[in-house]
Image (tube, rainbow, N blue to C red):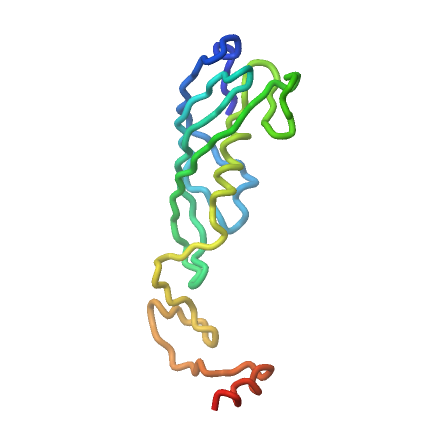
Length: 165
């Protein structure tokens, strides 16, 4: 989403409130994670010494399979966002360390979505005490029990088991 900053570019210390809803980029849905809502972002953009400081919070939700039982679970996120924008022709600014913009508008997607993606864990559980799936028969141990014997020892480690006898 493009946000016009023309009114604050000319005055140091000027601020503009930001309250937007951002569509998740398609490339962020990786086949496992599916964003089920837009990100709601509330924050402020401030002109600080000729660069723009964006700060605020992104809130939303996504679905992901449980890491133990593979049931789809909905997870919420609340991510702080603090990014700096500098005009691409800015002098005295390390342009490699900031986001750049052209003209009088900044791209909020460029600042917010990477922060959201980096804050999301790689594994989630449907509940903290999820028992997962039986490694032998695949039964969901949250819903049923099975009669599979779980005491199989990896043959490569069988010699170590003899030491414990």
